[in-house]
Image (cartoon, rainbow, N blue to C red; front, top):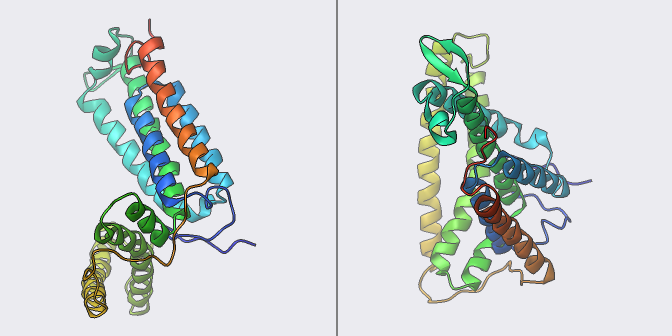
Length: 278
């Protein structure tokens, strides 16, 4: 049985995704993200989303492990879409060159063009979530840092990246500990309390979290100085992974998807936008 994964915490598992180099996963993540961000063709975006969800299943990432992050991101996506819909109601008609009105609200013309554009934009944002989760939950920070250093990146910068990836689960653990401590002291943080009271009580979690974060930064900095970090021009790595055939195939597949997205935009849509209204 696989160990239980935590939010933003690397999980050791024996899957094809975990066996890839950290640098390979970064390159694949960038290729697929650029493909989604470049295209406004909802067919391409949905295809990449389905592909990334399948990769999540291969990587054995369960929804329960990323549920909170997904909820927050979806709230942001929906809020952004609603605001854009009412503050730029004619943007879709400008893009697609037609206007099919289906309702009017507070004097604002609601069109299918704007609705289609906002739905496409929502799926663009949502399709990046699985890609980011795969990279964060299947990449060993130390191995990723050694891969960056192996292609010429300064080992100090590579080590800083590794520390950043390691820091996410630490923040999560500290937040959970402070949350329980504040509840034990009688602070009401559940849905039973009023929204304003919960907001005020949440500040009592954020402030200790900030101070604990600053203390950890100072502790890590002192430990690195005592061990002579950055004194030498090079360093060895405890965890490293060489490129193999799987890495080449993964990068080639991601590059092919990216080039396919460009080809669809250039030769089929004759632009970045897919127009179903013509």
